[in-house]
Length: 332
Ligand SMILES: [Zn+2]
Image (spheres, rainbow, N blue to C red):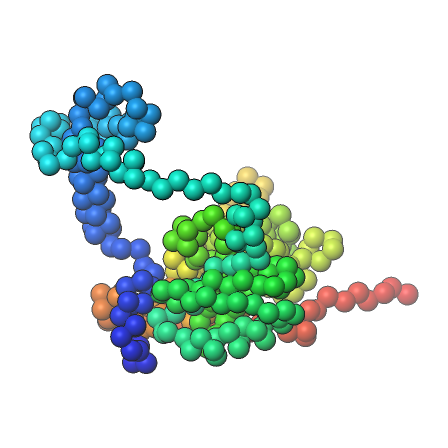
């Protein structure tokens, strides 16, 4: 754990764990969930099935699917007696009804993003947004509302600023990323998929014929959603490496290479090509996940004797002017 922390750090650690849980855990919790769900859904039993209420129909539809999977037909008829249909009705009755006007919804989420400082450190908020103000070249004011887990709701006063922030990036503060996503007035913060960071990925040593825009989109799709392939107007590569702007998920480890199966003249071969990442946020060299370091990595304990799988080599500087090497030499 980071030593910087006050009491708030603990909460952040739980919220920020980026690894998928070990498979066993995941399966266990899935089983638990299905058991719980089974108890709740199946208890009303056939009476409920025969009921005509639409909302109940939706709940019950899950039954035929979950039954064979869990194979628990014995317990099927012996659900918890404490649960009654009446409770369900009561909850539905208690719903507060709201009527939303279109312009009201639109105004609530106008030029607003949800963001998260993707780090186990709690940032100094003033320093963070001082950095962002500069990186975003703000033309107008913005309002920042701080939420739990290093999350912020940011509302811009100018559409230009809003678009610039959504279309640009990665936004870095002291090596860690500030993730941003569209945030409309109608979606709950917890429903916004806040896990992508746009990164220019470089592929090295590709044969010429493999460096076209269309193929770049194909390679990039193996890494994430492709925003852009850096090719010239003729659709061909401009550098001595191939550059693709991809929205990388922080929930997946960085890849060190890309495998391409090349089919030519009836024969095929798989070749691996080295990847590097421009301005990638901090990642840890054992697990390859963005957003934490050795102290915070649960894979480190499991693989303490293993050599680092990743290295700083994976990181490269932003594209420099001298790397734009295209020039045309005219014939006489
Ligand atoms: Zn890790």
